[in-house]
Structures are given as structure tokens and as C-alpha cells.
Amino acid sequence: MRKICIVVGSRANYSSIKSVMRAVQAHPDLELQLIAVASALLDRYGKVSDIIEKDGFKISARVNMLIEGETPVTMAKSAGLGLLELPTVLESLQPDVVLTVGDRYETVSTAVAAAYMNIPLAHTMGGEVSGTIDESIRHAITKFAHIHFPATQGAAERIIRLGEHPDTVYMVGCPRVDLVQEILANPVTVRNGRLMQGGVGDPIDISQPFLLVSQHPVTTEYGRGQDQISATLEAIKAVGLPAIVLWPNADAGSEDIARGIRKWRERGLAQGLHFFKNLPIDTYVELMARTACLVGNSSSGIREGAFIGTPVVNVGSRQDQRERGHNVVNASHTKSDIEKAITDQIKHGKYAPDPLYGDGRSGERIANILATASISIQKHITY
Image 1 (cartoon, rainbow, N blue to C red):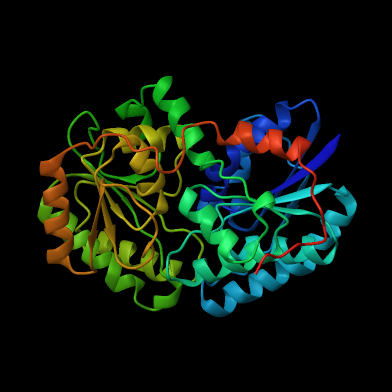
Image 2: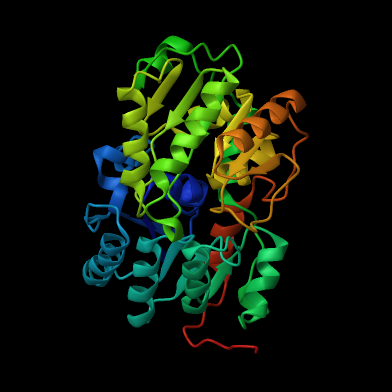
């Protein structure tokens, strides 16, 4: 029986790998090990570790590796702290394969630790481009990884062009789409009263048109986050629809965005806004299916949004060059540009679903491959 060790470091990490965790846990030839790290352990980011356990998963180990401050310096130090702590945990768990997700600092810590310890490394969501530090990290992890699970055909081809052997590259789709398909097929209606008991701010009637806002810092534009979120909030105010606003992630610049949100509230401008640290994935997906428009720079608008058909305004450069469906309209960080894009998307309404990022069976495919594939620690590069 192969022991598959999955490292979860944030709310986005969890939604990106939950269906794989479930498939691995259910597979007769696999044993799931789970390490919760970084912002997944912190209350200020919604303490995703509690949600993981509530969903029926056992956490094998916890690694506190996030140095607070959310600056480029603390992000680099957090990656270093993760590299100090994770080898001890991996030595204890003795996994047969380590599976890491995407492109974050905890992801690169996991990749380096596993590679140096001669533990085969599997990587999801490799091969994608965005033009920011995330892309650099993502491609670096591709070179550490021994087996690859890209979400799109374009990403798979890019991994092969990076020199990875085609036999190690499996185009499986995005595991996040698995959850979306399941939730949309078996909806549990989110009720206004219960939803509004969480978070802070004005109550919003989600049976009426509303906006959904998810905007994170751009690490290559550190220091501009407060102005960027202010422009978004000004545009939302001008559009005139109520909005549900999510707190930013833990990347460098997070505090700039959080400060911008707090100042907006302190100035008494937050009428019609309700703020959440975190939302369960089923609630978030239903809100994406209902919203008149998703605004910000979260990859959820591009991945899940394409499958759902959510009108999306992608603000700024964070998702630059990432493959996207017709549901996405780009806007710069100016009030007028964002306002116009939101207005246009509201007029358009819902888009036809696009399976660009998967068909809802990625987790099952990944578990079956992990159970049966021959994984060599010696890489065979095809430059």
C-alpha cells in the first residue's frame, strides 16, 4: 500500500486538492497522510484545518511556518522555515509519494524537502502561466517533481517543453472542478439568515443581484495593494449592487489589502458590503453560481468560473496569461475601468459552461495513477 502525503497550506490549497484527498482515502491501495501548514492553521485566515477535520480527514501533522508580516521578506523566511520543519515531519511519516499543490511558498518548501530526501514528488496544476512570482515557483516545482498532474492540455504541453518526460505527465483536469460539479449537481441552498450570521457588515439578500469580491495581493507589485483594493471598492460602490467581500490570502502584501478594507469601513463607506475571512467551498460555489459578477483576481473566477459560467471581472496582472474561458473580462486597477467591466458583465449575464479546466473526475484519475504508476526518483529529461 502506497502512503500518499498531501500538504495543505491555505483555503485555496484545500479546495484545490480535496477531491484527491477523498479519492486517495477511499482507494484500497493507498493510505492518506495529511500535513496542515502555514495559513491553514491560523484563525485570521479562517483556520482551514478545522474545516478539514470537520470534513472527515485526519491531520497527521501540523507545521507552523508562517512568519507574520506578509512582506516579501517574511514570505521568503516562511519558505525557509517550512524547509527547516517539513523534513522532520516527512522523516517521521515515511511517505512513498509527497503530493504538493500549485505555486505557493509552502509548496516550494515541500518540493525542496521531498526532493532532497529522495521522496518521489507529485505536483498538481503545473505548467500554467501568470507572469508573476507564482509562475516562477510553479515552473521550479515542475523541475523538482517526478510525476505531473496538469489541469489543461496547454499546461501539459508546456511541462513537456520544460524537458519533463511525456510518460510522467498526466492531463487530468483541475481537482477544484470536481467539487464544483458535485456541488452544482447536489445543491444545498445557502440561506440568507444563516450565511449573514458569519462575517461582519451589512446583511445582504442573496436572492437579489449581488457582487462577489475576491482580491489578493500581487507579490510582484508589493506596496500597491491598498490603492488597488480601494479602486475596486470605489467601482463597486459606483455600480450600486451589494457585495460579499472575502479577506485576502496570506501572500506578501496581504496587510496592504486588509488595511484598505479596514479604512473603507472606518470611513463609513461599507454600506451594502459583508466581509468574510473564509467560506466553505460549497457556500462559495453556490455564491459563484448566483452572483451577478465575480470581481477581483482570484483564480477561482478563471477555473471554477469557466465551468459554472460565472461572469468575471479579472482585475490587474495576477492572472496575466493564464488560460481562460469567455466568461472573463479584464480590467486595470482604475475605478472607471473596473466599473465599466462590471456593468458590461452584469448586462451580459451568465455564460455557457466551459470545461476548459476539467470535467469533474480529476481526483479519481489522480488517485488511480498514484496507485498504479511506476514512479522513478531518477529523472529522465527530454530537452
